[in-house]
Length: 373
Image: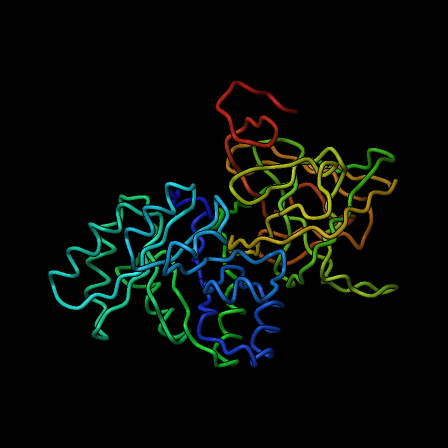
């Protein structure tokens, strides 16, 4: 069965491609160049169209013959439980579609759904009470619950039902404006929150020359965003994106001049990685001053020899440090949400930091006795 946590709590949005006419290439072009990855298609669309490598096809099956085009490990979509059982025997993930009308159908729906990886549900009435009941019934199961919707505003409501919401939606609409709203939502979807703490600087000094890494991403960061970088596994300091005034060069809002290559950088899924191990395609955590997180993809890591600056301090009773390039144009986020030029930081200044329990093995959190200085 599917683990509900496999996508770190993100809302899933499946686009219903079955409703898109072949002549609407404008819609397919928009989908192909958007963050939308999960697309429900019928067997004819699967055979006749090409999709970007990012696409995860969810194939509707109505006959046993449809199964021949589906590979093991892929997801199939059907209202026919016998076909889903055959697909599961062939190693496929299974999604059952149930249209609910009446109390008996509602009760049966969640019981049937327990046998499958996904449930896509639709209701005959506009009330959200049936959805609340299914959310409650499936909350301790591994079945991923999606509600069929036709507008983005409906999706927003569904995500808020019982404060928990459904795990996702099947979005069935060919209106360009509505698809753009879905695309924008996915592009900026949070990957959670982290608790940020004020760090009081105890020491700052130049430590000589060394390699530092700039992380160039495939996205654009805001002035209140950056990355968490530190020399120890018990936390990092908020290093700003390159979105603040530079007198002699253009801004690089896709970049964080992160620090010395030995440093940890925090990533999605409560993992950390050495800056030296990042490469094109790696995923890193972008954090704002409120602790909201999103994922960015690394396009390039640029390492160069530069003078380095050691910044030490204490946050939440933990000693942390970061080594960044010793230059005025490097910004570290102040505890008040105001960027501070690295070369102007002095003992007693307060910066923004992230604190966690120490102990990492190949970047993964482990419980062990560890001392890092």
